[in-house]
Length: 405
Length: 172
Image (cartoon, rainbow over all chains, first blue to last red; front, side, top):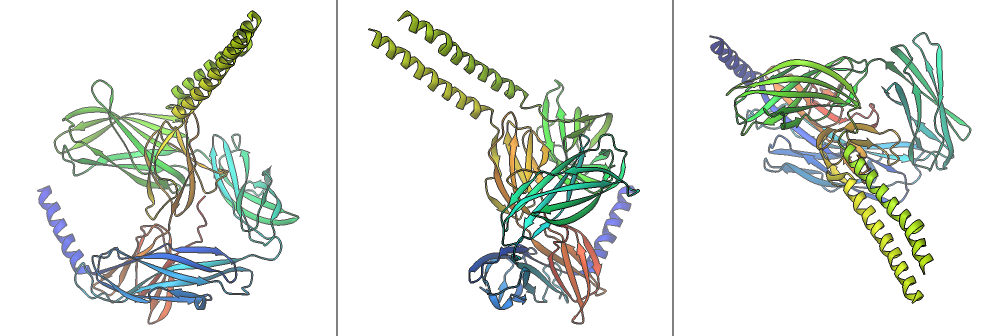
């Protein structure tokens, strides 16, 4: 009864899909942007690729627009791509014009797909798709000139790291670049000031200055950082809001659908970022143990950035070839930064189903330093042996031998 | 006779120094993390990159060679890392530090257009970077939409021009 209902729903969905979608077009270009430092009179050749991702028969027109359009020439301005041609390599040549004013100058190379028939339904698609690869030329400002941003990392282990990327956009080098960061509470009270390191930056170069703030005793909540960058008696200000709070990733559920024993099982792991900031580079790692408690399988999801206070699905795959029916112990790790959250599970594996049963939950900090522990011991032992051998020879046996002589 | 013995001492000196150097080199070579993939100076448009290594505790990833603000990703061997377009420098830290390798993820601007029977379109960001999409109706710019990676929106229009959205800033 349930199966019949599902089948009829599927049928209705397919009919609706066929009626609603009458055509698909797709076009891509790589790279999306190329930047150059200004060198008047020079020529730059740039290769770029047009991607026919839908593998359609398509007609393409390429044109240049923007303030540098008279300085850019194209290898091809119109061409056709057949369904077997997935990408076409093209080239443009930029002749850097004379006397450009300081600042950024850009142009666009527009790749336009002319309307035509879609490969999906053979219907005529009335829309036109175009993608752009941008060309940007930075002309240095006279004298000293800096551009800065502000990235806030953490808190991690109670510390917030402020990273200020500074780009020297002037034609003179920056000799001393440093800064201070004032931290304000939500009531706009200044609660701390931290200083960055001091560096020098060559013209057209990009470097970072960094400051750390110990936020371990700070109340959770929103804060504002105002960074004052001082470069050779000139001042630049950037600011950003950030949150201090507990960084935690919670497991909401695990599902394995459409499974057949011996095939590849797709684990869908639903996690929730309970922190008020994005968690970067998180991934799930799963270990499955045999009856002797040995790891018989280990698989991971790709890393992903999970937005603040939101849920995300992590996908990992397990090849179950050679696996027998039964109940297996398993451990799921949710890893992010130096933190790792661990959940003990049982996998009840049958011919067409994997049932995931949760058992316990452990949160641990800092999973690092495990695998290289043994190596570090070997390294230290080796160094001690070397030092002992050398000391005993040069300070003892060698002298003794010389005395005998 | 004394001359001969002095020669012996010098020979033992030489053997000990040489053996120390060889042993130290073997020790460092053994303890140093072994990087298998990706190769140095890889340029790709695929945002999912497999990092394959041995004898490591974590990957340090940064957009500058000084590693002044690295992202630390704890993984003891292989891991697929999803990265935004940009130039990255990375190394593996274990008992010792590995060599530094460079990796470039090139941005790919890709727009997918699905036309519905009612004349409306669904636009999908099928590339690896955020997009600004200009929507034209009757030859005039109607609106500009921002689409995150894999994001889709339903929209009315006839011409759609997609370009990389750089307002999000550079990779950190």
